[in-house]
Image (cartoon, rainbow, N blue to C red; front, side, top):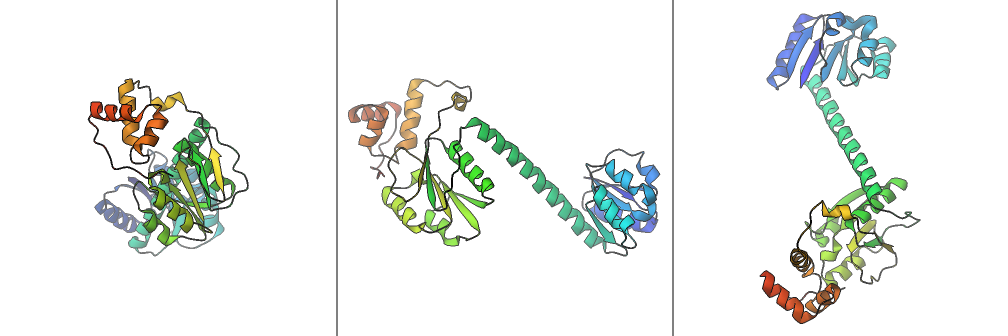
Length: 300
């Protein structure tokens, strides 16, 4: 990142520049704000109120893209209040340790990164919400189950629910973690959102439901099976052709993928029933596609 140091105390400016350059920053030094106005845009601007004078606020407004940190000799409306209102991010009181200045720079960089990430996720959620038709969130209270045929639809529903109820979510997927480990650190202030519970066997799924009773937990399941639980939200999403990502696969490839995806969730009899074929036909397809027979799975 490039840094502009506007400081008429040359020794201080050079000390700051030397330290920042040792950390990989590219620094330029000017002694007046008039010189600074002739420079290109910078990521970080360290602005001395002594060097800026009455032009500080105007200069800050002209550089909204930059992290501006004021370097001041005393605290006043002109040195702190007005620059902060104009868009400066922080200030540091002279004399100061350069390590403290670096800490402030790092803090502002982290805050900027988090802000940009938040904007990204907000925009993605808006897109996701437009892609799937989500129902009104209603007056449900955790724990509850959201059952659907689309993980995207459930995600959009749960995020919308959290936003409308001003709740903080913690995400955990049963594709990566064991449900027993996930449930060890529940919080009263954070709603735990557990996805991919359809990967659990029947007994494990029942145990999960027993353990979340009375807890701040939302569970998603992609299934059309009946679920015994006090609050189950049925969220049916019409399949979107855009989910194919523009690719058309041979029918055999679709069959192969369906068998691979669901063979751990359903017994052969149940899987064959859902595919609309006989159990013998399913066995023949396994043989044709080179798919080893899996151990019989429990069903919900």
